[in-house]
Image (cartoon, rainbow, N blue to C red; front, side, top):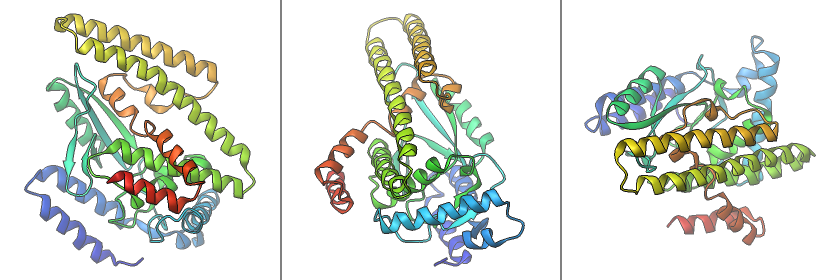
Length: 333
C-alpha cells in the first residue's frame, strides 16, 4: 500500500470535518462505513498465501491479480493500489442505495456530495439506515427503491479493495466489474450519473472483449453480449412504458385517475418483462424481484442509455483506447 492506515484515518476524518455541517448524521455513517471497509483490507498476495484461505477464494483472487495487471497493460487503466487488496465485510452488500422519484414523475431525486457531485441515489453502509431513509421518502410521497450494491468506486480517493460481496459472481462479471470501477478513475463528470455509468459500462465491454479473446474464451464474451442484448431489449420495453407514463403524468387527469393509470401501465410492464424473460431462458435479474415504480424506472437507464454513443466513439478511434479516452474527455467538457 502506498498510504498507511493512519493516513486513511486522517483522510476520512478530514473529509468528514469538511462536510459535517451539511448533513452530520449521513456523513458520519459514510465516514464510519468507509473506514470499516479500509480497516479490513489485506493484500491479495497475503490472503492467497494464508493456509486458512479456501482454495476457491484463492483461485478467484489469483484471477483478480491477473485481470488487474491486464487492466494496466492492455486497457490503460490506472496503475495504483485499487483492487490489489481484499476485504471480507461479513455481509452480502457493501452499501445499500436509495433511489427516489415523485409519484407522478420519472425525474429521479438527486443528492449532492462534495466529491461525487449530484447523483441519483443516496448510499448507506447499513441496510437498516437505508430502509429508514426510504420510509421517510415514502411518507413524503416519493416512489422509492432500495438496492443492495456489491461494489462501488471512491474515484481513486482511496485504494478500493476487492470485496467478499463480489465473490459470488461469475469470472466474467467479476473481471468486468473491476474494469468498470477503474474506468471511473479515468473519467468522472460531476452531476451526470448517466454519462459516468455508460462510459464505465462501455470500458467494461471493450475490456472484456480483449480479456476473453486473449484467453481464447470467445464463447464467454458471446454469452456476455447475449446477456447485454437481453438487457437492451428490456430497455426498449421499459422505454415504451416510460413514454406512456410521461404522457399520463403530463395530462390533466385527476390524481386518483392518474394513479389508476399508472398502476395499470406498471402491471403491463411487469407482464411484458416476464414474457421476454421467459422467452430468453435466462435467470431473472435481481431488480425484477422488487417493485416496479417511478424510482426503479428512473434508475434503470443509468448504466446503458449512452453506451451506443461510446461504442460508436470507440469505432471511430479504430479501437484505440488512448484515442477513445481522449475523445471521451473532450465530450465530458
